[in-house]
Image (cartoon, rainbow, N blue to C red):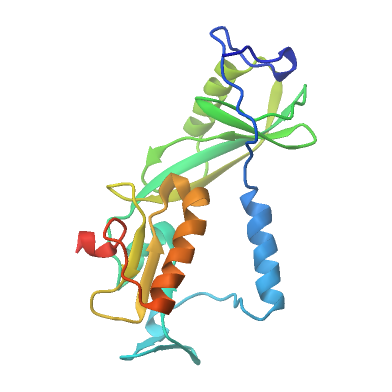
Length: 228
């Protein structure tokens, strides 16, 4: 147990823990970089997906002139509108974050009640809230909650420069949804990563590819058949 350094501005009358070799993933930068790479290699096609253009066959599927062994639906909370997978128990969980500018910059991640992640130049991301359902955009309630928790965590003066919101696709048992449609072998789903998407996605995406390419059976713990 230790006390935070004064320049961190943490309110830590009871002390705290310093974890070394930690970090975070800048998801926006990562996704943009991956999208750029796969676009350059003619892999990514940006378009509005229409379910009525899907033509199912026994061994393959076609869509708007494209033929493939399978379609993998990775739609998050949007899966509730999918005509083949709407029966999956996706539970939307809205989260909001604040973007702030701090008077005294520090290069550590603070975490107690909310996290405060540096993004350079005295800018920080503060989050997150948890509210059941899919809210449309940031709310005053979310800002007040984050403001209150942030002031309980740090003495650093700051000003809010932005606010964002997003919807997490969660499941009743907090486990991912991976698997093949029970009636259509060429339709697959990859969803339900919830609040742990950054840590779960690399493992389970590779796992899904292995299931598709090598006909490995999906583990019962994440197989969508547990809800059918």
